[in-house]
Image (tube, rainbow, N blue to C red; front, side):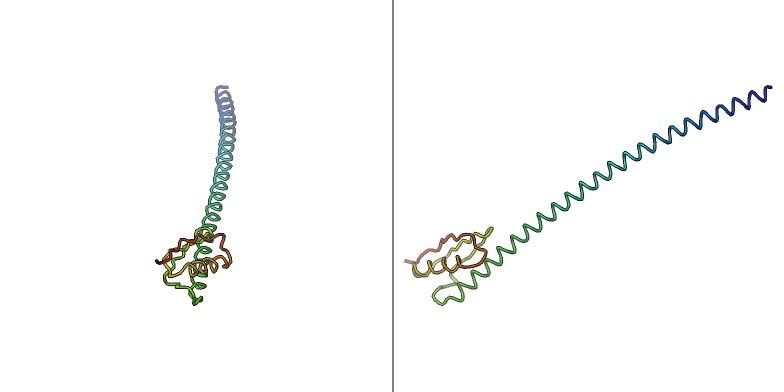
Length: 134
């Protein structure tokens, strides 16, 4: 009888431990699932942030290249115009806004440089800071 009681107690204990273990396993699974969902969300946010950064960087690079291209086109137009002392005129472009500076011999030369710059594709505005030599 004592052996039967011991066996019965051992069986009940094993079942209790098994039930407890299953409950712990379920809790562990739920915690793991929650952690996985949080990690997935964090990864998605990080990927979105990286994509946004890449788009912004590409936009800035594109703007820079566009400004450089505008500057090159304006300088080319100035060099092709025989009536303009292109080597005496500096050209800077920021967000499509062109600034001309330098010193030329006549007001008409400064005006022509401005007109040439205004005719270049992509130019938003022209600030003519060219000085006329007295």
